[in-house]
Image 1 (cartoon, one colour):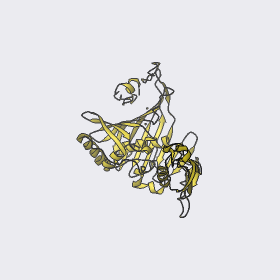
Image 2 (tube, helix red, strand yellow):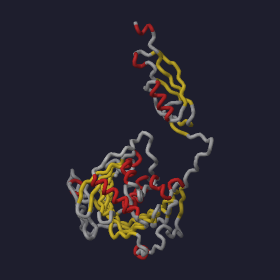
Image 3 (cartoon, helix red, strand yellow):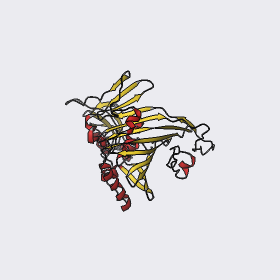
Image 4 (cartoon, helix red, strand yellow):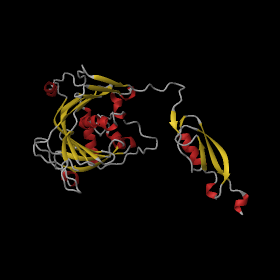
Length: 383
């Protein structure tokens, strides 16, 4: 399961049920503005992107936002905290900007607090003679429309399932115990349900793009490198009467793919579930897998006491001895110095020109790294 595949489930559910973002439009949409959704849901409504804790050097200071944006985030947080279950329909457009292809899909999704979710993706074929509204800006030719690949993603709180009904396969990816339940907010599938506004501001940069009588448009940019590895930017349209999403757009890290979700018929905290009857699903998080080939991807066992953790030695060649020492000690290594050849220039004195083991070598933390430094300039060289 790739990061982007798991993101498809995580982002859909996170946007649908909580504050934050964490798994596509017709032509002028990308360049100039909004295309309002049609009754059939055939137009992209937006214009034409595993989460460990941030690294120690990540700036967690929260910038002060305009009062209106602060109010929106707080209202979103409050509305999210009241959601126990959520289900609805979704329409999806995926734009491959390299090959000028538009892939379409539709389906249903379910969410149950705090950590269960499901998204069913079915291929959506274009109507006869239909032409993509997304156009290559260079050739002016419309994108090729293709039905997307059908698939199912299910998170049952213990694991994430990827199900292929055509091939009759089901792959199970276990969620580490420390990321289950409410802790899934900080885990590899960031549903972000009920994430506090203050925490969301630490994790993302928010901008208010547009404010209309019944909806607001938010621009969301990751602050953490771990989030930025999944998407470069997100645009979210929120219904301000319910603070549920109407649409969300993601731009991938490389900028070569855009994914847009549009949401319909959202039902919050309803006992009756019409989508279950429609698709023959009794418990959306426990599908029948009789006759399927099962593949289990277990979590690696935790490191045992006394077991040495492996890491790669960073390169410190060209650093002065103080900077090299700081870098290696932060990486968990001991440092030993060896005087080497005399420096030929004053600025090279005590600069590292050799290290053992070599850079990028796998070495247990706590091991010793030997640095060879340029010595003081020889007397003869000063004359």
